[in-house]
Image 1 (cartoon, rainbow, N blue to C red):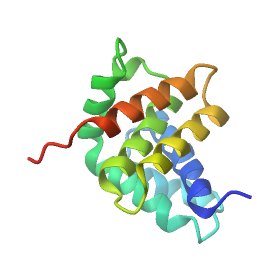
Image 2: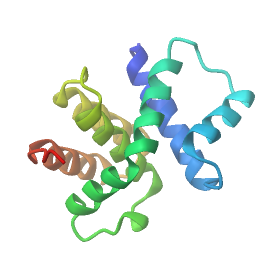
Image 3: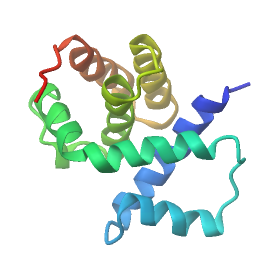
Length: 139
């Protein structure tokens, strides 16, 4: 059985993917509208909201990291599933302190295996591992 955070990551991925298809709303606004029509266990919602909030707030920084480490890929050319898995993973690696880096990377690879293409798990693993190994620069 999936733990609550694993399930919340799947929900966040689904919602971020839907938001990209309907990006006239902010991610937070999209989630609020989507949740009027969908049912989610209340135990998942706090972590889903945290992931969406961090991705929304830090998206320029997250996307810059993706661009830096997704060699030879412009971010807009990446598959939307892979792009949003990376956004979730980087949010956890950089801004959610209670997620160990190995867990963030492993969970990203699991999402890529389940929802991405044939090459997605290795791609996601490589980008997240590179982001993890990069020293953070304090602004």
